[in-house]
Image (cartoon, rainbow, N blue to C red):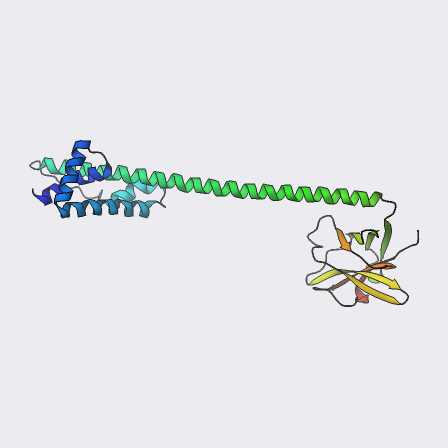
Length: 267
């Protein structure tokens, strides 16, 4: 057997492409067992197709066929003149390469479909996560709204109006103090947005002697649309005040930045 002629016949490409008959497949298999050079050629053809497929998998479908032709060595600008004296080899050779192109194109389509499926799954998972977050936020907002309604309607809740002070007479706020649960609901709609690097701080006050106790800072004041904040207050408060402080808060209120103040009235 002329091994070179057999390799150039194109039958090995057809074997790799899976287009031979069962009988022809068996014949190629026997030859492969007898001639290591032919076995190596089959393995090289398979490796070339896999490499070609991987290299082209990220290209657009518009350029896929042209890219495969270039990788296989076809050149549209040069026309090879094939002698009619040797037709039995050249036609089969190009048939083998055509089968390889069909196989590579099929593999590219499969990879493309898998990539699209993965993308669709990722988008679906992201949409589900957003939906779950929206549902959770809606549920929390509904629960907070119901809680606030109960507070506003409860006669046992102490309501404290906080008026604007000093240079901030146009500001205002209101405190709803639930002594039983040791918390206040602060309605701070009447305060302007905190300047960059500054933050509002809420204080509980006793008046004799005057002693301020910090109830904490309102870190999310600017981003909160409702401007209603639930704050823990275990103190025996006689008044409430709000000051503007540097980010992180202060140990004592800055009186020059006292925006609102209101005393607790006896009921």
